[in-house]
Structures are given as structure tokens and as C-alpha cells.
Image (cartoon, rainbow, N blue to C red):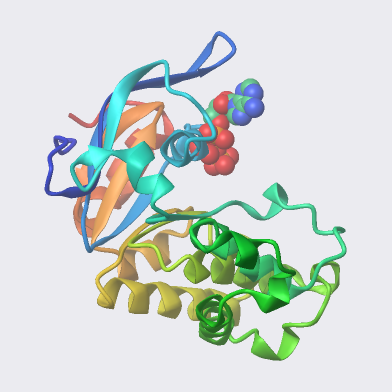
Amino acid sequence: MANKPSDTGAIAVNGLYAAYQRHPVLSDISVCFPRGEWTAIVGPNGAGKSTLFHVLTGSMKALKGEVTAFGEPIAEHRRAGRIAYMAQRDAIEWDFPISVWETVMTGRFGHIRQDALWRRLLPMRFAHPRHHQAVSEALDAVDMSALAKRPIGALSGGQKKRVLLARALAQQADTLLLDEPLAGVDPPSEQLILDVLAKQRQAGRTVIMVTHDMPGARRFVDHVVLINRTVRGAGSPAEMLSDAKLAELAVGMSSE
Ligand SMILES: Nc1ncnc2c1ncn2[C@@H]1O[C@H](COP(=O)(O)OP(=O)(O)OP(=O)(O)O)[C@@H](O)[C@H]1O
């Protein structure tokens, strides 16, 4: 049974509909992502998982419905830089001639916007020391400090994922939205990313990730939301990730 939206959630979605042109993708999504917990969003290809993130991040407008974060409209929460988003790897132009450090620094833009005007006009290397500190900590967390000066086009697939994660971490947001952070990475990078996310959760952050990695989800997350165009279930990993439940999800049947 899908859980009902409530103010106790980091993010509460109520009666959400979304479509591309006239093609409906999300229908009557009502779900609550518990605060301070690590949630996996699971569903088959084309189920609308990324689309839900597009709505939560404000890059796509819902047709209908309401989304709140910590009890306030999510747009306010976003404006205050309290939601970080890690897109899928192909959302970035990797041939763009910028370094790993500069890419991670772009995660600070929400905070830099609040700096004094004279500081904002300076080149990025003169940004306030707290932004440098946040970038250094994020690069350390994903073990990429040694490659800080490397052009992003010269990274491996797993390194690119780590850079995207570091950019999200550099935002120092209280909620992390991660679209397939484990896709296409080798086992050491996967372990590192899972460890980083476990630490974020221990630090009290709310972590919400889309994943197809069932073993990782079973081992690590607190909560699972099943989506196939609408919410097909929400609950513990043991309950939601059983073979029977996943088989139902794949064919789009409701388990309720
Ligand atoms: N920009 C777009 N224009 C039109 N249709 C789109 C667009 N983006 C996605 N879609 C369609 O919307 C549906 C949901 O896509 P979405 O990317 O949200 O699914 P997903 O669950 O994230 O899938 P995957 O696991 O494959 O990443 C799919 O049928 C997809 O083809």
C-alpha cells in the first residue's frame, strides 16, 4: 500500500500528473519520502522515475498535483539550495573543456548567488573560501581530489559518476536526489558511492535515489517506492523487493 503524503516527509507528493506533450507519463502519484532516510525508487524502464525527478527539481512542470518539502512548497526549498540533484551521466556535455574542480564548483552556484555582488563578478578561483572548502570536501568524499585538474572529457565512466556525485555533495543540501548513481560503474566505484550515500544518511540527510541495483537496494536503503507510471507500493526493502512484488511491478499490475 502506498504511503500517504504527510508533513513528516522530507518530500511529499500529492496527486501528481505529468505528461510530455500529450503523452501522459505520471498519473496520480501520491507518495511521501521519509526525512532522514534513504529511499530507493524502483521501476522498469520508461516507468517515469526520471520524470518524477524532473518535476521535483523544477525542470518540468506538473499538469496537476502538489509537492512539498519539509512542509513548504518545494520551489521555496529549491531556491534556498536545500535540494541537490545528480542527473544521469548523459545529462552532461562531457566534451566541454572544463576541469573536474570547475564542474564540482558548479554545484555551489545556488550558494554563490547569495554572495556579495563584487564576489560574484570575480573568476571562480576567487570565490569565497567556504565554496573552495565544500568542493575539496566533496572531491575527497568520492576519492577524486587527485584528479581535480583533469578535463572532464578524460575521465572513465565510473570517475564521471563520482564527479556528478561530488557536484551534488558540494551543494551541502539536506535532500539528495540521485538518478541512477550506480548505473554503469565498476564494483569498486559502486561500493564507494554506496558508502558515501550511507555516510550522508548517517549525517541526517534525506537520500532519494533511482536504482535498478536490487542487491544494493536490499542491503542499504531504509525505504523503497515502486513506480510504474503511478505508485505501485511503498515500504521496507524486504517487503517491496521480493521477487513476487518485482514481477508484478514489471507487468504494471498494482499490488494493492
Ligand atoms: N523529453 C521527452 N519527450 C517525450 N517523451 C519522453 C521524454 N522523456 C521521457 N519520455 C518518455 O516518458 C516515459 C518515462 O520516461 P522516464 O525517463 O521518466 O522513465 P524512467 O523510469 O526514468 O526510465 P529508465 O529506467 O529507462 O531511465 C518514457 O516512455 C519515455 O520515452
